[in-house]
Structure formats: C-alpha cells, structure tokens
Image 1 (cartoon, rainbow, N blue to C red):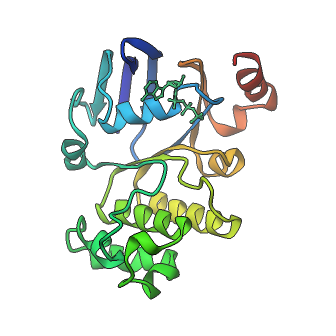
Image 2 (cartoon, helix red, strand yellow; image 1 turned 30 degrees about the horizontal axis):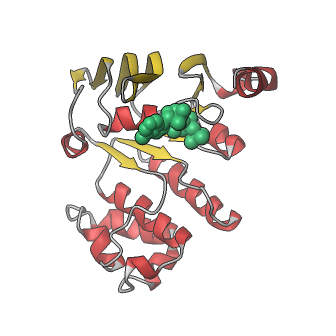
Image 3 (cartoon, helix red, strand yellow; image 1 turned 45 degrees about the vertical axis):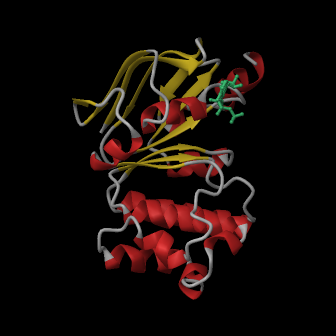
Length: 228
Ligand code: ATP
C-alpha cells in the first residue's frame, strides 16, 4: 500500500530522517515507535504529503507520489489524522463530518456507533466540544473519507482513559474493514496489540522492523534509553 524508499527529510536543511525504508502492506497496521525527537511525526508528515523529503521516494500502490500535496494523496486513499484538535471550530459536528464525506451514510452510522457522544451532539459547534470529543470528530471525519491508509499521530494524546479505549476500538473497526493504519502512539501496549508490524525509529534511523511479538523489552529499552 505505502512504501517509503530511502527517505531523508528534515527542516531548513538539517536532516531528521536518514535513509528510512518503511513498508505498510495493504490491509495491515504498522506501529511506529521511538523516543522523543526520533522523527516519528516527521515521517508521518512525509507520508501524508505535508513535508517534502530531501531525498527518497514515496510510493502508493506502486505509483510514485513523492512531492504530492495532502489533497492529492486523499485521491490515493491516504488520509492523515494529525496531532491535536484538527476540526473546523466554527462548523457544527455534522458539518465537520459531512464536509468531506461522499455520501457514505453507513460510514456515518459506524462513526456514531463508535462514538455515541457525536450522535448526541451533531448540531453543537465543534470548537465548543471537549478535547476528547474534538478528537473523535477528527477520527470520524478521516473514516468518512473512505481511506485506504490512515496516518495517525498520537491521536490518544491527552484523552481520558475511557475515551482512549473508544478510540482504539474504533481503530480496530477501521482496520477490520480493510484499511491500513500507520500509527504513532504513546500507549505502546495498545499500539502493539493492534499492530501487525512494528517499526522502531531512533535518531531518524530505523532500528528494528518486525512483528510485535519479536520486539522484546531489551530492544525497546536500548532504542529509547541508549540512543537519546
Ligand atoms: P515526539 O515523540 O517528541 O513527538 P517525534 O519522534 O515525533 O518526537 P519529530 O517531531 O519528528 O519527532 O521531531 C524530530 C526532530 O525534528 C526534533 O529534533 C524536532 O525538534 C525537529 N523538528 C520537528 N518539527 C520541526 C520544525 N517544524 N522545524 C524544525 N525542526 C523541527
């Protein structure tokens, strides 16, 4: 589905990612782990088209999409849920959701089923919702775009534990329906439970790629502690 080939990327000339190779096979979920500053958000920005890599190639289903803007990538089924509250504050919840939906009422039903709060607050101004509720809107909106690959950057950040559980249940449903997920998560255990593969990044380089069960504590510890 997604292939990053030898990606180097960064800001104002300084590379943060060095020769990163990463594959998200169709229908699979990849957890991207690593210490603070490792380059996880930068990698998601490159994959989502908001940051152009300095070197390397981005392929979606074999097509070279390097340099494409996020709205172009949506046409390839690639959709980003960024960190923070990515809603239009002055639009209602309903407007936020239907702005991007192309008439998938079953997708709307599913989103409301996953987050019953949204169903009760369809007419509320999104900017007046709590942080957790706004995150539900952002997730539901991504799903309504009928994505084939969803890029998720710490979507559970700052949420109450019960909402975190709802978010992960929702992601599991999206995954079951065939979408691929690439996620950066502070809840490592929950991310690993969802993931088919895990990629460990440290100092902008891939340290480990494998299945979650292959990842022992020692590997995580040496990446998180030894390399900062
Ligand atoms: P965290 O877990 O702390 O969110 P991360 O792995 O997501 O970290 P990035 O946010 O990708 O890491 O940051 C990697 C490096 O790039 C850091 O040193 C950071 O300071 C730098 N960086 C990130 N965004 C910018 C920017 N817009 N301009 C300049 N440097 C940046």
